[in-house]
Figure 1 (spheres, rainbow, N blue to C red):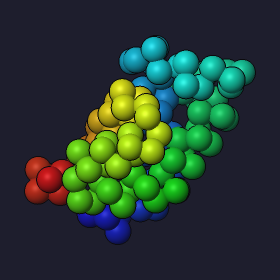
Figure 2: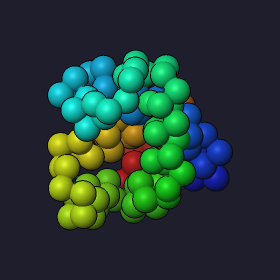
Figure 3: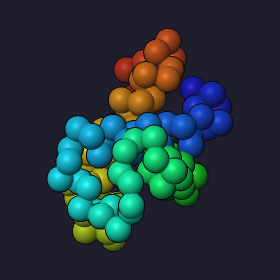
Figure 4: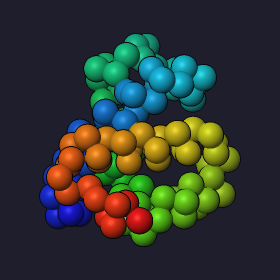
Length: 107
């Protein structure tokens, strides 16, 4: 699964971040310095891609989403933001890879 998902990581990150900003408007405070916060804006797309390219989330998601949340919030102190983003990344992986993102992969 991860061999298929890795090339799509920038798209998954952009989609997940865009969905988070729409569904959870309170998370926009973390990005308030951006001029345009719609899901298709260049800044949202680039930041979502950068999050996934950093490898932090993709590495930890391979093991356990709760470990991702714990590790990132220890350093970033933005628990709700990271928790929502992690759940949106899982949602987007399920959207992009409907056949392959099985419960076994999700664990």
